[in-house]
Length: 330
Image 1: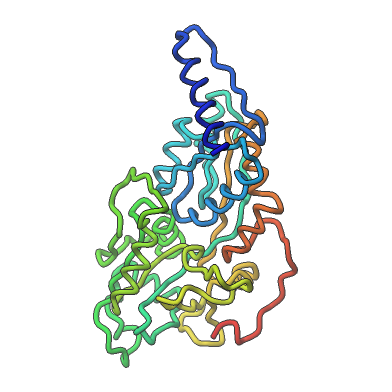
Image 2: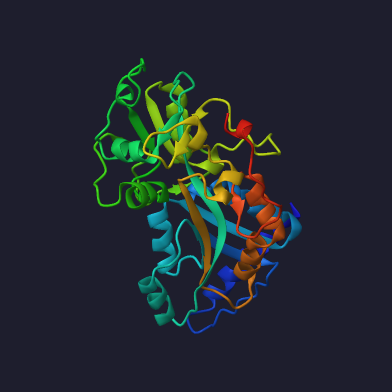
């Protein structure tokens, strides 16, 4: 109640300032631990970021972080339009984007936030849980269309590939890092098609819809960010949620148990899981206000422990990483 009253008070003074006329200059009063700040977040990382916001606000009762969860393309549109001063996404700014921000007399600053991974999930009835990067490429480009082409013993039919959004960082990773110069096949289906959708994580988000679809369809193959399927009740991060299976992925042309890895944080850190990617937190407002305060928290020790808890590998090492034994992959 105290925090809600404080926020209403801030909003009142903002409205009052605007009502005083166009000649009245609005002076920002936020500090690194108080005020209101808006951030744009790739929905693929909503669980991690929301937990960081909850902890940050709990520690700073006069701070209010308002996230906009959406697909990667729309998140960058908001950031480049100066509607948001902080963005968390699976890529850094391009050189052209940096120049455009500097033209607005702002100095962008970016830093690595975590190492994430794309997970491939299948229905619990599916016995095929090993796959190679080569076969992933063939599936995503439509060269392989049935489970029998991967495994002649399979009793399943056509592979139903499900992903979150056409404009998501997940699709961009598959297109750029896996398929490369080859076009995506017509066998891929998005669970959300709204290119400017703003997502409430209390509802069924596109990533949650992918999980639901895979859990209900034996032929499905889901493409999803690993933090959506990490088991929140597993403090050692050695398991995933129960209603789906997570595939092990091999860099070799033919997948085998010996050289296939699941997206556990240890294998992400060691570079053995092939579908890994870096996450970035970018800010265009470095004046020392609340946006800077939240960025410092998210990239600091407490924020990075939340990253580790979510099953990702932090940008700043918090624990000693050791090579996991064979039982971790089972």
